[in-house]
Length: 156
Image 1 (cartoon, one colour):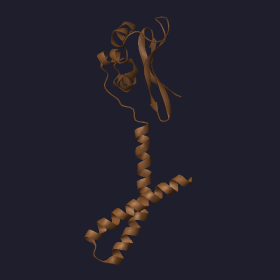
Image 2 (cartoon, one colour):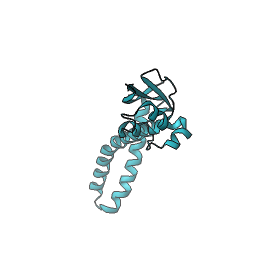
Image 3 (tube, one colour):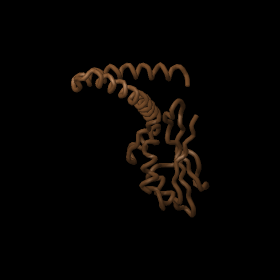
């Protein structure tokens, strides 16, 4: 482990110790018991708080907002289409539609034409931790009907 982990745990431990000592002073009158509980609580809570802070940090870092599909927002904010991709896939809105119905609903593909079986829609870029994530929606046709809708994420 790097030295930073020890320093962070030391700081968390000191703060935890001070808070526990102050809180237990109000409820426990026996000095011996209060001191033992303060140390025991500090030893148990410090690593739990550290792991919790790491979990919060990564959940914030990798958070991607989601929203329901809205045709107006789809066309108005191309760079944030990725927020609607899960709803498009999970709800089955595009399933069994023909190419004309797809064009009416989500427009012409950014990549692919009438002659290809797979249409690609650029959904914009989002944060992916310490890099970028390029989001694409792939709509696969068979006999002019949608047979598969999937997301593609490329992390840089």
